[in-house]
Length: 87
Image: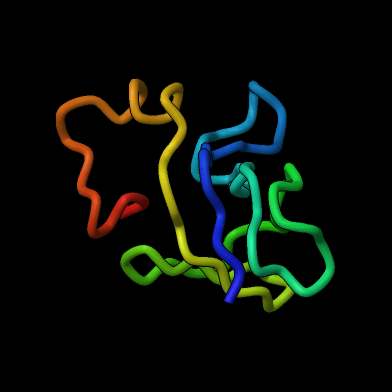
């Protein structure tokens, strides 16, 4: 299973679009991916589901979330839950 390190959430869509209508992906450095070398910076396809630290995209790729980026951690604030970071 691929793992994403130094990750952050990225959203797609117009700034005028309602937040719940925007799509979300994960951007970070991948390891263990069959198509990309370890350390390559990638942006996943749109997130389809999240189960704790496991993210499945609409393309069918399953990722485990590794270390969060400092920028994303700062956005999360005090409520950040390591066991369910996207929950």
